[in-house]
Amino acid sequence: MNISPLNIIAARDIGAVPSSAAIENYQLKKIQETIKYVRANSRFYNKKLQKFSEISSFSDLEKLPFTYPSDLSAEPNSFLCLPPDKIARAVTLATSGTTGKPKRVFFTAEELERAVNFFALGMTAIATPEGLTAILLPGQTPASVADLLSVALARSGRKSLILGPVIDCAEILQKINDFRADCVVGLPSQIFALARTGVAKNVKRVLLISDFSANSLMKSIDNLWNCKVFTHYGLTESGYGGAVMCEARSGNHIRETDLFIEIIDPKSGKTQKNGEWGEVVFTTLNRVAQPFIRYRTGDISRILPGICNCGSELRRLDRILGRSKSGFTFENGEKITITELDEILYEISEIRAFEASANNRKLSIIIDGGNPEIALEKLKQMPQLQNINIKISEGNVRFNGVAKREIRREL
Image (cartoon, rainbow, N blue to C red):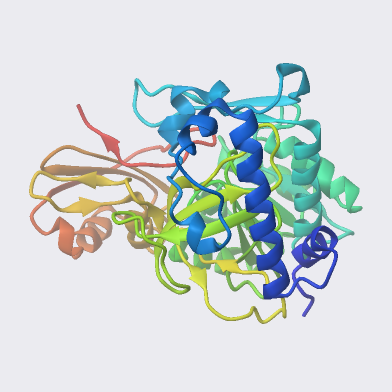
């Protein structure tokens, strides 16, 4: 088994074999430099960190305040550390709710280049040199994720084709087969729907990105297409790439020389130990346009203890369970999340997709394929739904672009 290709990036940046000690030394130095940089160049952090002294250890970092997505949406330009003419790309991200201001994330050309380099190396563990990768993401915008991924694959001698997000499963599946793609990259729910629609004859590798992946979903894709399923974790704010699986498929190796990741208790804010679940918080180490210090993602995961079977000492992030503030809470105090629904409903044979909405007393599910009676029986076994009115109906579920799936609140 080959070692994680991210070791190449880490070795280049550190200038030595990326051992745990070497990585920590590099990260602490970079964190110190980043804090000094944002104090001097960012209006937001100049004010935010004014009362805090320099850090000399990771425990000192824990004393610094968190940065919230709401901070970014309130005044994104206050994070900028460079003049507008140095910005190569600006990305507008919608926030949850109908009145939330969008977030704006800025990149220099060099930062986009680092993302391409991360994708290029990460994909060497997934896409084969002789095959074709079908990218099921929007690709019309230059420097979009699909565009960067396509450039990265070409750089590593691999062919790709951007097919766009899944709207018509039969049409996309036909294209995958016509072009004999042996690797597919896309959103978990969309690729799951493809797998339940029919066989991708040549696909041997699948990379799931941009949303949460239930265990039942990954197992189903693996079994239906007789392929290996990999996952990636990253946000636009993190510089796109964050962590990706190696051939061992045991957690996602973190992009350690570009991000310092902490896991915290979502309520207390205290740092969790390796192996303990909590919220993912990151500090960027090489961003110059718009660095982030202790940025709270809301995503729930953990750092896997020990060294990966591939031999890399880069830390590994476990799969994302969901978001700390996601889901729907009924009037009786019980809560349900889309991830929990995924685990139950994706196990039911023939279900291709579903939509969920709720009000104070009722959970409504539209399923595309499958047996409504079996779905209802399974859901009624969930403890938090014992006293909730559950309505199951059949219908055609259309995917909402590349937006993360959630339980919609009924008016």
